[in-house]
Length: 184
Picture 1 (cartoon, rainbow, N blue to C red):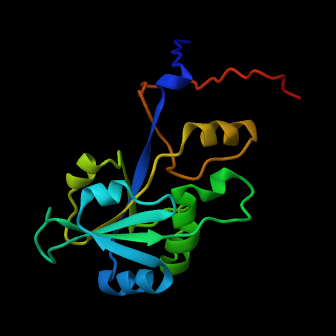
Picture 2 (picture 1 turned 90 degrees about the horizontal axis):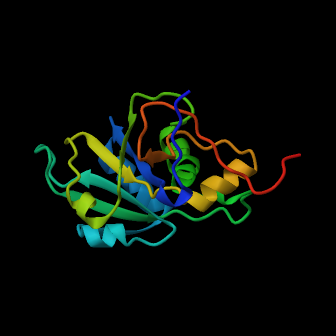
């Protein structure tokens, strides 16, 4: 079997952003504002520098023109203070538990035609270049930090759907991790 080894320091994990379609955007936005502390911006730098508990929700500024500027709403989605692990507080889990499930009835463990995924960075330059169709909205996710990913692996936990997007990509292969301690 062909194998490739990538040192831990060379692995990069990007996020899978959540693209939503078929929303009543005004009603959904009102529900978000009623449920979470929010701040609004059109500045990609502010979106990229959002606080650790903030999730970025974006909708096209224009109602009909595609690829228009995006209005961003930064939602303060609280961390679970009683979480079993750090994995319970990553962006995709908080989004699913506090927004997608309760407000839209979307369970990411199943397929839903209103939800799709787009991998990518969430830096200011990339945010400024995001293009959405008039009927789309996006939640930007932060990549899962590698230490949280490795801790989850060590604990035998399963990662949430679409929470990791590794680079460099290999066509196929086996992921092997060297463990410094003996396994039981």
